[in-house]
Image 1 (cartoon, helix red, strand yellow):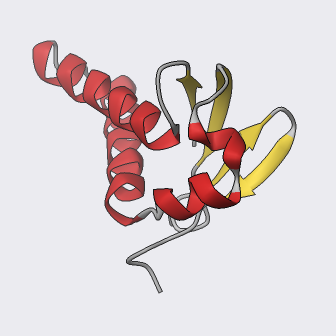
Image 2 (image 1 turned 180 degrees about the vertical axis):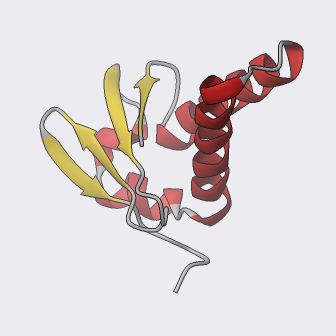
Length: 102
């Protein structure tokens, strides 16, 4: 799946948290139906996985572009298995670093 986040007021971790919170709030406020429900649930699950297992300190140190010092659009590329996730920024791919995943 692909999810777009904006680094305009924080780092990649903050952007993912904000997007996750918006999705959960919208989902609970007006529960979607059908395919939209499945699509949103998959996004929430993928973002939850990233937030729980990602080594964002390592990501910010190794890839300063993800530290939020510039306003950027980041495309999260999250495969079904989640642990192969990466970020697409200005045409460059940055692999996700993990804390709790072997």
